[in-house]
Image (cartoon, rainbow, N blue to C red):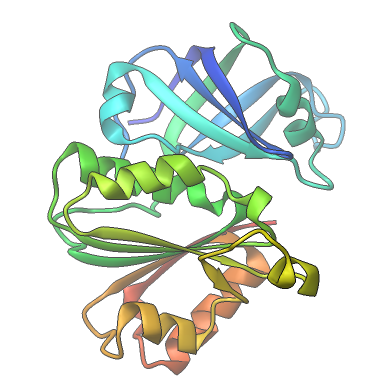
Length: 250
Protein backbone atom coordinates (compact mmCIF):
# COMPACT_ATOMS: atom_id res chain seq x y z
CA UNK A 1 0.00 0.00 0.00
CA UNK A 2 1.39 3.40 -1.02
CA UNK A 3 1.20 6.12 1.62
CA UNK A 4 2.12 9.81 1.74
CA UNK A 5 3.11 11.37 5.04
CA UNK A 6 5.43 13.91 6.61
CA UNK A 7 8.65 12.70 8.24
CA UNK A 8 11.11 14.73 10.32
CA UNK A 9 14.90 14.27 10.36
CA UNK A 10 15.88 13.05 13.83
CA UNK A 11 19.52 12.12 13.18
CA UNK A 12 22.07 12.55 10.44
CA UNK A 13 25.67 11.60 9.66
CA UNK A 14 28.29 12.54 7.10
CA UNK A 15 29.14 9.09 5.73
CA UNK A 16 31.74 10.17 3.14
CA UNK A 17 32.87 13.56 1.79
CA UNK A 18 29.94 13.56 -0.66
CA UNK A 19 27.34 11.37 1.06
CA UNK A 20 25.06 12.09 4.00
CA UNK A 21 22.67 9.69 5.71
CA UNK A 22 19.70 10.67 7.78
CA UNK A 23 16.94 8.99 9.75
CA UNK A 24 13.45 10.41 9.37
CA UNK A 25 10.70 9.72 11.89
CA UNK A 26 6.99 9.63 11.16
CA UNK A 27 4.09 7.21 10.73
CA UNK A 28 4.70 3.48 10.51
CA UNK A 29 5.66 2.36 7.00
CA UNK A 30 5.22 -1.24 5.91
CA UNK A 31 7.89 -1.93 3.30
CA UNK A 32 10.04 -4.75 2.00
CA UNK A 33 13.82 -4.62 2.12
CA UNK A 34 14.99 -3.09 -1.15
CA UNK A 35 12.06 -0.77 -1.83
CA UNK A 36 12.30 3.00 -2.20
CA UNK A 37 10.36 6.15 -1.36
CA UNK A 38 9.77 9.38 -3.24
CA UNK A 39 11.03 12.38 -1.29
CA UNK A 40 9.30 15.70 -2.00
CA UNK A 41 11.64 18.67 -1.78
CA UNK A 42 9.94 22.03 -1.03
CA UNK A 43 9.61 24.17 -4.14
CA UNK A 44 8.83 23.69 -7.80
CA UNK A 45 10.70 21.84 -10.53
CA UNK A 46 11.43 24.41 -13.23
CA UNK A 47 12.83 21.68 -15.47
CA UNK A 48 9.71 19.53 -15.40
CA UNK A 49 7.03 19.54 -18.11
CA UNK A 50 4.74 21.01 -15.50
CA UNK A 51 6.85 23.71 -13.75
CA UNK A 52 4.31 23.93 -10.93
CA UNK A 53 4.87 20.31 -10.02
CA UNK A 54 6.69 19.70 -6.74
CA UNK A 55 10.24 18.37 -6.88
CA UNK A 56 10.36 14.63 -6.14
CA UNK A 57 13.30 12.24 -6.11
CA UNK A 58 13.50 8.50 -5.50
CA UNK A 59 15.75 7.16 -2.73
CA UNK A 60 16.20 3.57 -1.65
CA UNK A 61 15.36 2.83 1.97
CA UNK A 62 18.59 1.86 3.73
CA UNK A 63 16.89 0.66 6.93
CA UNK A 64 15.12 -2.65 7.41
CA UNK A 65 11.36 -3.31 7.54
CA UNK A 66 11.40 -3.55 11.34
CA UNK A 67 12.48 0.06 11.71
CA UNK A 68 9.90 1.05 9.11
CA UNK A 69 7.16 -0.42 11.25
CA UNK A 70 8.45 1.72 14.13
CA UNK A 71 8.18 4.79 11.91
CA UNK A 72 11.91 5.28 11.22
CA UNK A 73 13.18 5.52 7.64
CA UNK A 74 16.89 5.84 6.84
CA UNK A 75 18.07 7.29 3.54
CA UNK A 76 21.55 7.98 2.22
CA UNK A 77 22.11 10.64 -0.42
CA UNK A 78 25.27 10.86 -2.50
CA UNK A 79 25.92 14.17 -4.23
CA UNK A 80 25.66 13.65 -7.98
CA UNK A 81 27.38 15.93 -10.53
CA UNK A 82 24.10 16.85 -12.24
CA UNK A 83 21.82 16.31 -9.25
CA UNK A 84 20.85 19.66 -7.78
CA UNK A 85 18.51 18.09 -5.22
CA UNK A 86 21.24 15.71 -4.05
CA UNK A 87 23.46 18.78 -3.53
CA UNK A 88 20.79 20.55 -1.50
CA UNK A 89 20.20 17.48 0.66
CA UNK A 90 23.87 17.48 1.71
CA UNK A 91 23.10 20.56 3.82
CA UNK A 92 19.79 19.71 5.48
CA UNK A 93 19.50 20.19 9.23
CA UNK A 94 17.90 18.32 12.11
CA UNK A 95 14.14 18.72 12.45
CA UNK A 96 13.73 19.45 8.72
CA UNK A 97 10.58 17.75 7.46
CA UNK A 98 9.86 16.17 4.10
CA UNK A 99 6.89 14.43 2.59
CA UNK A 100 7.67 10.82 1.72
CA UNK A 101 5.54 8.71 -0.60
CA UNK A 102 5.86 4.95 -0.84
CA UNK A 103 6.92 2.30 -0.69
CA UNK A 104 7.65 1.51 -4.35
CA UNK A 105 9.81 -0.96 -6.24
CA UNK A 106 10.30 -4.64 -6.97
CA UNK A 107 14.00 -4.88 -6.16
CA UNK A 108 13.10 -6.74 -3.01
CA UNK A 109 14.60 -9.38 -0.79
CA UNK A 110 12.11 -12.18 -0.09
CA UNK A 111 13.42 -14.41 2.72
CA UNK A 112 11.10 -17.26 1.70
CA UNK A 113 12.47 -17.36 -1.86
CA UNK A 114 16.02 -16.07 -1.55
CA UNK A 115 18.05 -18.44 0.60
CA UNK A 116 21.49 -17.81 -0.93
CA UNK A 117 22.13 -14.30 -2.22
CA UNK A 118 25.04 -12.33 -3.66
CA UNK A 119 24.78 -8.54 -3.56
CA UNK A 120 26.90 -6.54 -5.99
CA UNK A 121 26.90 -2.85 -5.13
CA UNK A 122 28.67 0.34 -6.13
CA UNK A 123 28.48 3.79 -4.55
CA UNK A 124 25.10 4.72 -3.11
CA UNK A 125 23.77 1.48 -4.57
CA UNK A 126 24.62 0.09 -1.14
CA UNK A 127 21.37 1.44 0.36
CA UNK A 128 19.01 -1.46 -0.48
CA UNK A 129 21.66 -4.00 0.54
CA UNK A 130 21.99 -2.40 3.96
CA UNK A 131 18.24 -2.93 4.24
CA UNK A 132 18.60 -6.59 3.20
CA UNK A 133 21.28 -7.22 5.82
CA UNK A 134 19.36 -5.40 8.53
CA UNK A 135 16.35 -7.62 7.92
CA UNK A 136 18.51 -10.75 7.97
CA UNK A 137 19.93 -9.61 11.32
CA UNK A 138 16.62 -8.48 12.83
CA UNK A 139 14.74 -11.64 11.88
CA UNK A 140 17.69 -13.93 12.68
CA UNK A 141 17.43 -15.47 9.21
CA UNK A 142 19.65 -18.31 8.07
CA UNK A 143 19.99 -16.73 4.61
CA UNK A 144 23.47 -17.09 3.15
CA UNK A 145 24.46 -13.58 2.07
CA UNK A 146 27.60 -12.29 0.37
CA UNK A 147 28.03 -8.56 -0.28
CA UNK A 148 30.70 -7.34 -2.69
CA UNK A 149 30.93 -3.55 -2.54
CA UNK A 150 32.91 -1.61 -5.14
CA UNK A 151 34.14 1.95 -4.62
CA UNK A 152 36.75 4.22 -6.16
CA UNK A 153 38.72 4.90 -2.97
CA UNK A 154 38.61 3.87 0.67
CA UNK A 155 37.09 7.18 1.78
CA UNK A 156 34.19 6.62 -0.64
CA UNK A 157 32.91 3.54 1.24
CA UNK A 158 29.44 4.32 2.55
CA UNK A 159 28.25 2.57 5.75
CA UNK A 160 31.50 0.64 6.18
CA UNK A 161 31.34 0.39 9.99
CA UNK A 162 27.60 -0.35 9.95
CA UNK A 163 27.94 -3.05 7.29
CA UNK A 164 30.70 -4.75 9.25
CA UNK A 165 28.52 -4.67 12.35
CA UNK A 166 25.49 -6.03 10.49
CA UNK A 167 27.30 -9.05 9.04
CA UNK A 168 28.90 -9.78 12.41
CA UNK A 169 25.40 -10.26 13.83
CA UNK A 170 24.07 -12.37 10.95
CA UNK A 171 24.38 -16.14 11.03
CA UNK A 172 25.83 -16.59 7.56
CA UNK A 173 26.76 -13.25 5.97
CA UNK A 174 29.98 -11.66 4.79
CA UNK A 175 31.08 -8.41 3.17
CA UNK A 176 33.98 -7.77 0.80
CA UNK A 177 35.23 -4.36 -0.30
CA UNK A 178 37.10 -3.62 -3.51
CA UNK A 179 38.69 -0.34 -4.63
CA UNK A 180 39.03 0.61 -8.28
CA UNK A 181 41.35 3.63 -8.00
CA UNK A 182 44.26 2.54 -5.85
CA UNK A 183 47.37 4.37 -6.99
CA UNK A 184 50.96 3.15 -6.90
CA UNK A 185 51.47 5.51 -3.94
CA UNK A 186 48.52 3.90 -2.12
CA UNK A 187 49.94 0.42 -2.65
CA UNK A 188 53.49 1.36 -1.64
CA UNK A 189 52.48 3.71 1.18
CA UNK A 190 52.16 3.09 4.88
CA UNK A 191 48.39 2.63 4.86
CA UNK A 192 47.48 -1.04 4.69
CA UNK A 193 44.41 -1.94 2.64
CA UNK A 194 43.27 -5.49 3.40
CA UNK A 195 40.38 -5.54 0.93
CA UNK A 196 40.28 -6.31 -2.77
CA UNK A 197 41.57 -4.08 -5.55
CA UNK A 198 40.16 -3.61 -9.03
CA UNK A 199 36.76 -3.89 -10.62
CA UNK A 200 34.51 -6.84 -9.91
CA UNK A 201 35.17 -9.43 -12.59
CA UNK A 202 34.55 -13.14 -13.17
CA UNK A 203 37.73 -14.12 -11.33
CA UNK A 204 36.77 -12.16 -8.23
CA UNK A 205 33.21 -13.48 -8.31
CA UNK A 206 34.18 -17.13 -8.55
CA UNK A 207 36.89 -16.67 -5.91
CA UNK A 208 34.43 -15.16 -3.41
CA UNK A 209 31.26 -17.04 -4.37
CA UNK A 210 32.56 -20.41 -5.62
CA UNK A 211 32.43 -21.93 -9.07
CA UNK A 212 28.86 -23.23 -8.75
CA UNK A 213 26.59 -20.19 -9.04
CA UNK A 214 23.49 -22.07 -10.16
CA UNK A 215 21.65 -21.93 -6.83
CA UNK A 216 22.36 -18.30 -5.95
CA UNK A 217 20.30 -15.19 -6.55
CA UNK A 218 22.29 -12.14 -7.64
CA UNK A 219 21.21 -8.60 -6.82
CA UNK A 220 22.95 -5.67 -8.52
CA UNK A 221 22.58 -1.99 -7.64
CA UNK A 222 24.61 1.03 -8.69
CA UNK A 223 25.29 3.27 -11.70
CA UNK A 224 23.93 2.08 -15.05
CA UNK A 225 27.40 1.23 -16.42
CA UNK A 226 28.18 -0.88 -13.34
CA UNK A 227 24.89 -2.76 -13.52
CA UNK A 228 25.30 -3.49 -17.22
CA UNK A 229 28.84 -4.80 -16.68
CA UNK A 230 27.80 -7.06 -13.79
CA UNK A 231 24.89 -8.52 -15.78
CA UNK A 232 27.18 -9.34 -18.70
CA UNK A 233 29.74 -11.04 -16.44
CA UNK A 234 27.09 -13.14 -14.69
CA UNK A 235 25.54 -14.29 -17.96
CA UNK A 236 29.00 -15.23 -19.25
CA UNK A 237 29.47 -17.32 -16.11
CA UNK A 238 26.30 -19.23 -16.94
CA UNK A 239 23.97 -17.57 -14.47
CA UNK A 240 20.40 -17.58 -15.78
CA UNK A 241 18.50 -14.32 -16.30
CA UNK A 242 15.94 -15.45 -13.72
CA UNK A 243 18.68 -15.42 -11.06
CA UNK A 244 19.74 -11.83 -11.79
CA UNK A 245 17.87 -8.93 -10.20
CA UNK A 246 18.99 -5.34 -10.69
CA UNK A 247 18.29 -1.68 -10.12
CA UNK A 248 20.30 1.17 -11.59
CA UNK A 249 20.52 4.93 -11.50
CA UNK A 250 22.20 7.68 -13.52
